[in-house]
Each structure stands twice: as C-alpha cells, then as structure tokens.
Length: 190
Ligand code: HEM
Ligand code: HEM
Image 1 (cartoon, helix red, strand yellow):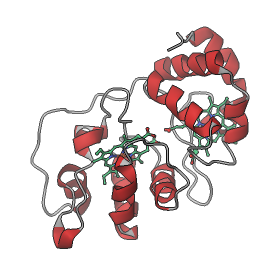
Image 2 (tube, rainbow, N blue to C red):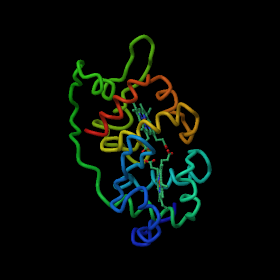
Image 3 (cartoon, rainbow, N blue to C red):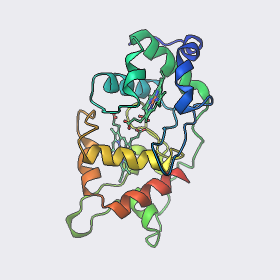
C-alpha cells in the first residue's frame, strides 16, 4: 500500500470540505443527502472506500466525481489526513449486559433472532458501542443517522456492493424499516 502524507492530503482535500466540512465531521441532513463523518475513520478503510467509489462498487452520483479526481497517491494522502483529524471518542469497551427493554441497544448488542430474522449483533463486527474494529469494520458511533440509513438502503438496493464477503447485504435486507431508523438513531447519538 502507498504511504499517505497527511499534509499533502490536506491540500488535496480542498474540494471535500463542501460536503464533509472543514473539520471532516460531515453533516446530517434530515431532508436530503447526509454526508458522512470522515474524521477519525481508519486510513485503510478510507482508501478502500475511495477505490470502491471510483470503480463503481459504491454508486454515489455526489461522491464519484470527487473520488475520480484523486489518483492512488492522493487517495492515500487524503486518507492519512482524515484519519488523523479527530480521533473517534473512546467508548467503554467493557462487556455490558444489554437492556432487553431497550430495543435499539438489544439489536446493537444481541441482534434479532426472533421468527428466523437471523440478524447478528452489530457489535460482533463493529465493536462494543459501535467503536469500530481495525481497518475493516468502521465505527458507527457518532456517525450521522441519515448517512447510516442511506447505507443500509444502498445495500438493500444493490447500490453498495463493495464488501467482498457480503456481510452487510443480508443484514440490511433482514432489518425492517423501523429497525433501520432505530439503529441509525442509536449509533448517531451514542
Ligand atoms: C462518502 C471522501 C468529496 C459527498 C465518502 C467516503 C469517503 C469520502 C472516504 C466514504 C465514507 C464512509 O464509508 O464512511 C471524500 C473526499 C472528498 C469528498 C476525499 C474530496 C476529494 C465529497 C463532496 C461531496 C461528497 C464534495 C458532496 C458533493 C459524499 C456522499 C457520500 C460520501 C454523499 C456517501 C456516498 C454513498 O452513499 O455511498 N466521501 N469525499 N463527498 N461523500 Fe465524499
Ligand atoms: C459497514 C451498519 C452489523 C460488517 C457498515 C456501515 C453501516 C453498518 C452503516 C457503513 C459504515 C460507513 O459507510 O462508514 C451495521 C448495522 C449492523 C451491522 C446497523 C447490525 C444490525 C454488521 C455485522 C458485520 C458487519 C454483524 C460482520 C459480520 C461490516 C463491514 C462493513 C460494514 C465489513 C464495511 C464494508 C466495506 O468495506 O465497505 N455496517 N452493521 N456489520 N459492516 Fe456493518
């Protein structure tokens, strides 16, 4: 993998601020397209997403022209820049018993196995409290609700098919609309 340079990345990210904002925190737009928080995402995850968008494994008319402007070195550079911008908040990692009366927390920490729905706990891959795991499993805590909803819908509609193991597709398909809203809100406000 190319080594990224955060200083060069900042210069290359000049056009990204229109949507992802100067602090890389993105924006939740309840009535339109939400822009994801990039600040603090793992560099390798950002690199993968930009290649996925360029090569059409993630279909986004808004994002594609900007991904297309970047060559491989610039992708590594902007990824280094955003990864360093603001660390993801440290969330408690200790196992805690999910509250069965809190539907969102239960879904996040235990999944939904009723009536054959077979939805694994989000925390199995995204970590306790959605803090992310390594380079492959992005943090969800503090990500924008509108963006989380849009990605779950993108998987359902086949617009995001960038996961080689299709881990998210089946999960997104088996969640119902109410659960999607609920889990997006839960992680956005953790
Ligand atoms: C998604 C980077 C410019 C709108 C993303 C993602 C990255 C990224 C890494 C994926 C985030 C994730 O998976 O969590 C950049 C960079 C830019 C740039 C480096 C500048 C070169 C823009 C601009 C807009 C925009 C100017 C608005 C016109 C979006 C949207 C998504 C996205 C809507 C979600 C795409 C989807 O639904 O799949 N961007 N971005 N981005 N960005 Fe950008
Ligand atoms: C990515 C939600 C469970 C594996 C994502 C993203 C969302 C999400 C919103 C996109 C993040 C972004 O673009 O920044 C959820 C929810 C879950 C869940 C709500 C529980 C209902 C899981 C599980 C696994 C998993 C159980 C593993 C078996 C992944 C992977 C990605 C991802 C690998 C990144 C795919 C890529 O490379 O683009 N998830 N997830 N998720 N999730 Fe999940």
